[in-house]
Image (cartoon, rainbow, N blue to C red; front, side, top):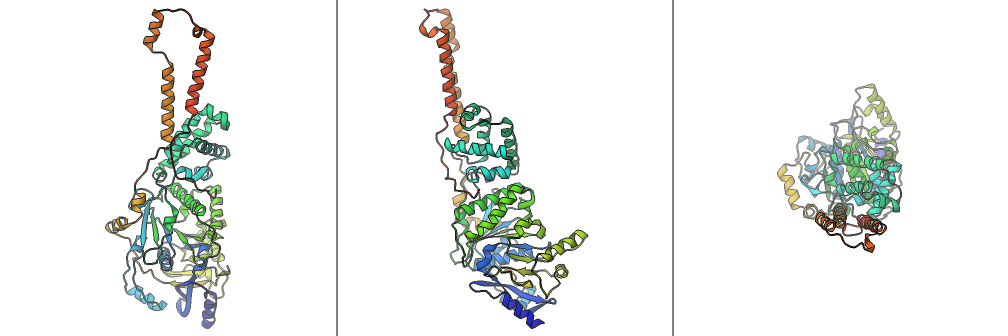
Length: 515
């Protein structure tokens, strides 16, 4: 039976092209010599799932896969929700357990630090990530705010109006100012060109934008916009950069996290050319605590996420979700994930047992394991593995002892984090917050100019008294009909000033978005 097992594993995990060893297959609780499990780099753009109960080794698996990709010159982006991935930047330390595991796996354990770039969304230590409202576009922004069709149409009209009148929408205060303007001072003039505007809709949109602000979105929206090409860098020693986005405060702000993820994926899709089949991906994203992406997502957002998952792999980009329960990922998206690494699950309730049976049914059938039973018995750092070969065919399901990470399996100190930030080539590029001349300032200036013009039309109190004290001969301009024509003309001029908004402001040209 053991010989058949080794032959089955070798046949299923022997790939053409670049590959990397991630562990050795196990049978009856023992590591089977010669049954090496490899990862084909060619199919790493087919996306994947890393799942398992707390304490089973998911994070260390994510860390190990990041190292494997970096060693093969593939850049990585890690969403570090728990704050325990920064240790990749420091070399690990060999101990008795690691040495014993390395011996079982037939590998030489060589501690190594990896090239790391730290990023932040909330002005923490690291390179600040930002994006403008214009770069989101009306469709994505509407979906994030959960707007209905009527409200979404109004947002699209606002973007069109701002584009036509050169009003840059950079941050949320720009968008709020335009919302207030179209619902008040500018409503009549704008309706003449773009159609009716519902005051109720503008009020609803404004409340939802404020809700997003309360989750800290003001920090994210603005300039200088982040360029996603900076995520695809190779370090000076030829290894792929491991970009760690430290979002430890996002667990209680899922809408902001979901907002960022969708915009990032849309931007990656927009700027990346079609690549077809590549020998290895250009970038791989690992989303830890992936349930946060889907927790408050509407059906429309889930549809957009599914579309991105399907299409972005042709751009040479892979996306991996890391979560406790496979059911955290919607079935439509789960079906798109080619690589599955399933750590142990815990069965404390009848619902847990049902979940385990469902998880077992999602794996390829195997004659070597009782999958549902073994799912509750695997040790730390062990997992079921199945992936896609070069032909897109699932490999045999194998119980695998995974290789340990070579970097530190712990977090960096504050001093070590600051040292990485200080040495970063991107910190200076993105650290300075820019408040460009945009819609907020332009509208305020126009409203002020209109107010001054209106004041100029009013005769001063002193002039009025003088005219009353010194009556003069009635002229053509004193005729009441002529006066009414003059007041009408002045009113038209004032409205024209309020509507003439085609001045000033520059921003990065909005890229064509998937949405």
